[in-house]
Length: 221
Image (cartoon, rainbow, N blue to C red; front, side):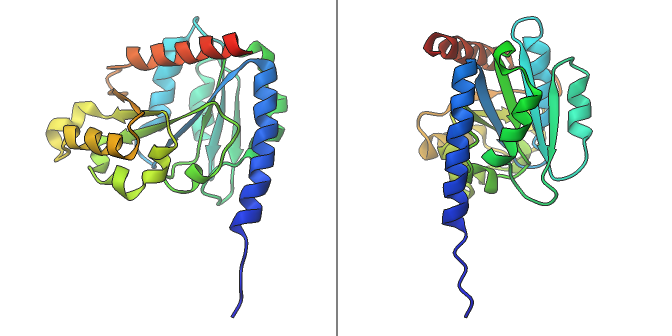
């Protein structure tokens, strides 16, 4: 029988790289947000709306993670922010070692906020620390009620969940109160924001949270 011992060394190496990234972010005084979700949740649209609301208020950079194509990065370029695409060529997550070399493409000291849009997946990205300050998960109501209990780790390690596609609620069987109850069962400290990215609704509390985190990071740096 072939024995494979892979996970521990890979995660250990990632921890070392993540800590190196974290030191760079701390020295630069930039707040770093890891944005995660399953495919089709509206994560990139959430990011676009966020950039619109933060325009003229914060200096933002974006790292786009995807398995293939540069389509998401091309969408973000329209917002006149520095953006770098990472294609994982099959890997279902970003890791800290992928992040490290692309940091050279940013003037980190000139940024207030760096948003890393992770590969669309609720499993693998949760395992890998990137050196970020916080994690936010986009969860659309069209995904149903069972995601917090089926994929608890990504929610347990997050600070924020954006419940997206609220405009479609009447057309689904999603029980919003039950969904939020389950999220808080998994992680009682989660901040929940109800939004509709398509209609640009509900974003102000999310934007205020980001701005507060940036202020706190500057104060600590």
